[in-house]
Image (tube, rainbow, N blue to C red; front, side, top):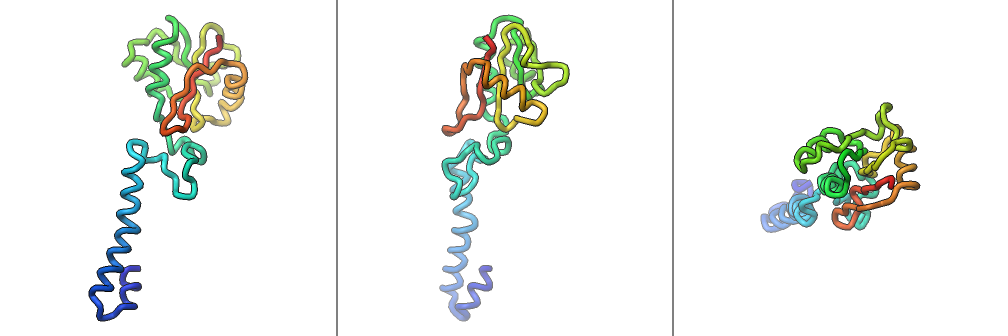
Length: 168
């Protein structure tokens, strides 16, 4: 594209330089500035047309598991001994339960056929992430949002990343 545009100005090195500088500004400097401006959550930037819609179009790709550490820490600080934490992130949850010294919490995967959040007893804390809503857990998460109490929400750049619910 640079060569094609510069060919319009044959014989003018200055015009070729200007065309090259404009192309670098558009295709290198512009995207680099955009990434820098959205640090440290680079994936929250979708495009200029979707400004203000962070976490709306592709929440899993935009957030991945941003905010999950903070949500699990919140549960660890609030939950009584032996309570259940329900989630869709077994590895991450197991890791943070160990980090925060709360391996006494019963870790359960919402979409597992061996666990049903709708009939679970005792205190059940649920970490809900829009980007981790699947066909396998959709009904359970609808139940949680309708019948459990919202305790805490982790926001990243103003967009809701993780919600924490409890059944009591």
